[in-house]
Picture 1 (cartoon, rainbow, N blue to C red):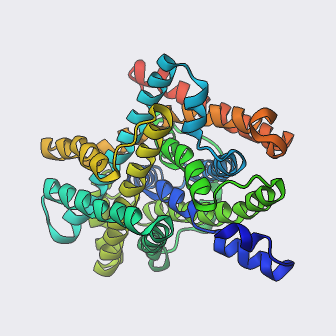
Picture 2 (cartoon, rainbow, N blue to C red; picture 1 turned 120 degrees about the vertical axis):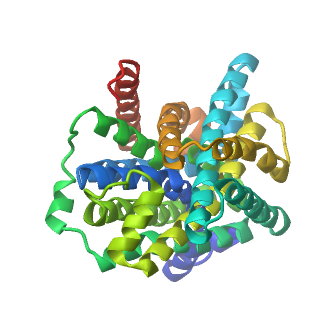
Length: 416
C-alpha cells in the first residue's frame, strides 16, 4: 500500500513515494483529451487559427486547480464528491442532481464512442455503426481488467493509451511547426464574433470535464484509502499535487498541440470542419504516416475515454442513488445512444462539438459544490482550502458560469 511508503525517510524516499502515488490523475486526465476535445480544438484552429489558444491555456489552469481539489476532497474525507452530496441532499434534490449528472456523463460517453468509431473508419474504412460496436466491446475489456485486476492495472492500461494519444496529436507539429509569434499572440484573450464564443464554450466544456470532477475524488480515495492520521493525509495530499500537475500538464500540451496543428496545417483548407476532413487535410499536408498516427491517437482517445466515462457514471450513480450497477452492464446500456446517433447518420463532428457545449453547462453543478465543500472546515478539517485557493476556485467558477450564460443568450437569440 502507498501509505507505509509515505512514512518513509527523508528526501529520496519521499521522491520515490511521489512517483509511486502517480496514477489516479492520469486516469482523470483522459477526460481532457477525448474525441470531443479533438473536434472542438481542430475546429477552432482550422477556422480561427491561433485566436483561441488562450482559452485552452486558461481552461487547463482551471483543470489543474479543480482536479487537485477533487482529489484532496477524497483523501481528506474518505468519500467521493457524489457520496458527500448524496448524504447532504434530500431525496428529491438528490434525484434531480443525479439526473443532470447522468445526462452529462451520457453526453461524454456518446462523444467518446463516436470519436472511436470515426477513428476506425479512418484507419480501416469500417462503417461508423460497426466501429461504435467495436469500441463498445473494447471498452468492456478495459473495464473487465479493472474489475479483475484492480485499479492499478487499469491505471497502467490508461497510461499506455495516454502515451499513444500524446504521440498521435503532437507528432504533426514536428513536421510542420507552428509560427511562434502567432501562437504567442493567441495568448491574448479576445473573441471575433459569436461563433468564437460558441467554440470557446465547446473547448471549455471539453477541457474542464464534469464527470472527471466527480470521478477523481473516488479514484484518489480508492487508490490510497482513508487514513485517520492527519499527518499521513497531509503527505498524501501534498504528493497528489505532483500527480495532478504532471497529468494535466500532459493533457494541456496535447490539447494545445491539436489547435496548433490545425492552425498551422489546416487553416483555410475546405472541409476541415469535420474530423474526417481534418484527417484528410493532415494526410495531404503532412504525409500518410502522420495521418495514420493521427487516427491512431484518435482511436486511443475514444477507447480510453469511454472506459473512464463509464467508470465515472457508475461512481455518480453509486454516490447519489446508492445503486451499484455492474460496470459491464452499465457499458451496454450507455452504448445505445451513441449507436443510435451513428446509425441515424448524424454528422459525427457536429455531434461531438454539441456534446461538449452540453458538458459546459454541467460544469457549475460539479464545480460549485466542490469549491464549497473543500472550503468548509467541518468537511475538510485541517485540509480546508487556503484563502488564495478559495479565491482561485470561485474566480474559475465565475468565469465558467459567465461564459455559459453568454452562450445561452446567443443560442436562444439564434446568434450562436
